[in-house]
Length: 441
Image 1: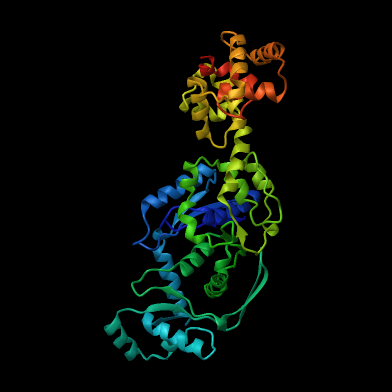
Image 2: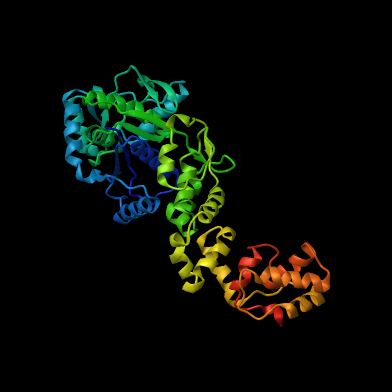
């Protein structure tokens, strides 16, 4: 069975960068009729916060990315300890004691000599007595996985055939000196024991994947299929990381972005397929193909979400937006005609309030000097309410006959006088909703 996972760290709010990873893993699992796991990577006790766990779940539920089960790494520390013991028994795990300053000096020396800045495995040459002395002086060391210096090969679902020389990579630190288990080994143990078959993540993890493949093999596990998607940039190609604080999902939700608009963009952004607004999750699932995605950096512009949101709202029946219409202040008996009038003239649901205020309170008339006599004559011909769907047509026909005006010269001044705007909804639909007409004087 196909099993995927989304594994956020609860050290902050979800943003568009890690949402893309979540969407891809979710769609792969659902298309295959498989399992989607929400795994909370909370092995860092200092930075992980329960409020972020709750926020992650809230964002996922808002988007409709429903998980089959939740796992938490903080509940599985014994499994990581067992894996570490096995690596020690295999001779693939060793303790190292260099300080950050010492490691930095080593890297600089290697770079000056034209060599890659790879850890030199000096710790492997320490005697037991030397290790004891270093522990007494510095405390416990970090634990590094000893890579087999051979080429690591896999066929990536997006990047194609990948080959990395393990000799060009430092032996990764899997456990810190304070005992904290790091992502690399925790992820391997979890993916193996949870039967994860497909791992999709950002291309910044490619080297990490190479080391994880060797760890999986050392522990006797089966490697999942890997795919590494491109990283998002800003609309001008700038690094998105500096702007992620303004692109948190909770902020987009507050700005009125609709879930299906966001999902439709994320499911196609960076692929060879055009972005298409989907009406529901089943359409997203059916149209998803990981092989259609490319390796080039992908530009993301938050402004693209708003036209998609507007189009999505236009497609919705009143029942789907009834709460928002009520919240805008619209009386129940006017909700249906109000939504029919407003739906194609809003970008987000927050815009409904402005349209109802116009209907309830009227608009400040916008009348050019040359149109004042015309508007006065037209208003004298406007019947007393209530108005209906025929009133606009009957009234403008009478005004045309009385004044001789026609076309834009007839309709535009009337629209501006009634709404204070040059464009907007069909006047035949809006006029029956106007409770106040200020231009009547």
